[in-house]
Image (cartoon, rainbow, N blue to C red; front, side, top):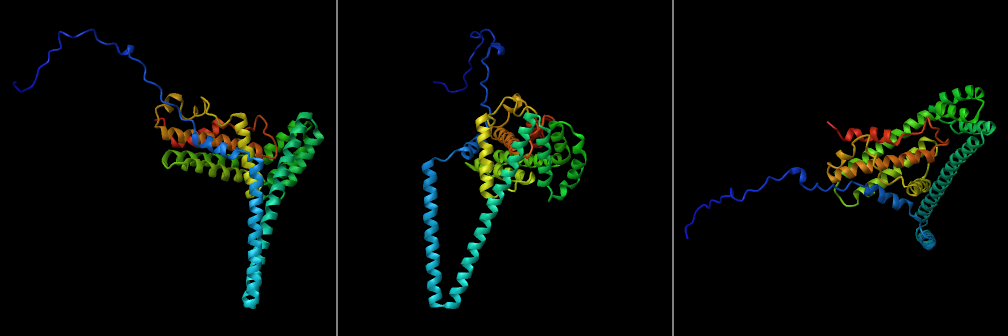
Length: 330
């Protein structure tokens, strides 16, 4: 058989040309869902069972008792063998216990301060619902007293004290308190939310390690919520911060706010552009946007007054300010 190139004539087999409009559409790429933020929300909002609470409580009690007895035996035996060294160790153990008690007292004070903020917000809600000017004045005076020790609020407190007598309805008085006293704090809290959203978006988009995005989302949310509480005067400790974080995420999960809506990234991208992004980058942007939603919910929980319609933060605007620098339409 002869070897060489083979010429195939296709002219006789030519059929009608295929119209590209008849071709089946390209299947859509699955939209990013912000899995890291949703996993962090489920983790933070999960309520431990009664059995697990008893287990960890008893485990901590047993471990604490064992450490205390071991430390006491160590100190007393050391005093018997080497009195000077034994008393030095005893003083060190006593100092450690004292520091632990101070930390516990600070945690209790932080929880009490968060309770004061929550009490003011509830009283303000009642004053608005009942249109009670007297109750609104009481809340305003409590608010002025609450921020008395903060120098950055001095001008606002003075202005509010001067003008509160000019208001003759509850809603007007509380809106004045927002204008004069809480507006600068709202701006500072918004900056914290935007910074946390950018961090979560960047880490999710650039770090391919498994669970790194979930850890980053949860850690950033904890830090953001704690900073927002401090801005509004809550000064949450470790236990208070965790309780506050759980309350925020429970509210978000219950209302479905951690779900990805069609207009979540519309201020920055638009749905058609989002579908053309890489999966990782799209997940980063969605996680950042969900982090902004968490921040807005934290502002609502930590703020001593409920937001009026004029002062209520816009999640869309916050997402746009936080994430527009990470993506260029051009």
